[in-house]
Image (cartoon, rainbow, N blue to C red; front, side):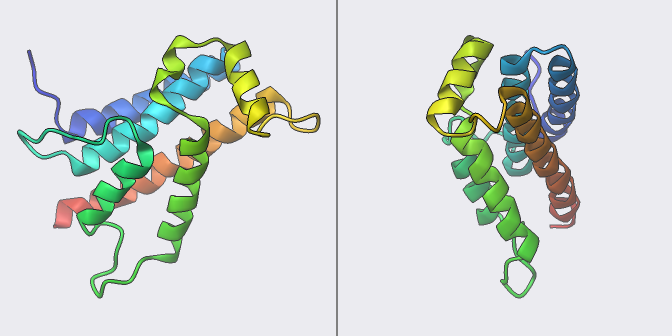
Length: 155
């Protein structure tokens, strides 16, 4: 079996974002949410990937972001965090609060109910709007990770 490397994760993340948008346009919201969150996970895994390394983080996006931070990719050379990295952390918090790996098993109705319980979906915020926002946040994280990939190439 072929080994998966950092570029495979990166390409997979980009593919999952595209597929998420396609599912959204087809009103397949649970699948769209799952793949958008998976794209974020893929980007983080690609950033922290090392040959032969076993990742102990599971599918926890906050733990994956912490691993990225341990590599020094979230800091300037003098050790200060970028303002946009704080924003990256808040974006990851949004995704981590609404997504988990087992969403691949559930229906639109289940995700909508789950998000209603979290007040993500309300009378004023429809499920479709919330899914669109979620996918946009995931796309922003993937785009910001592309910048971190450039920084990782220099280390």
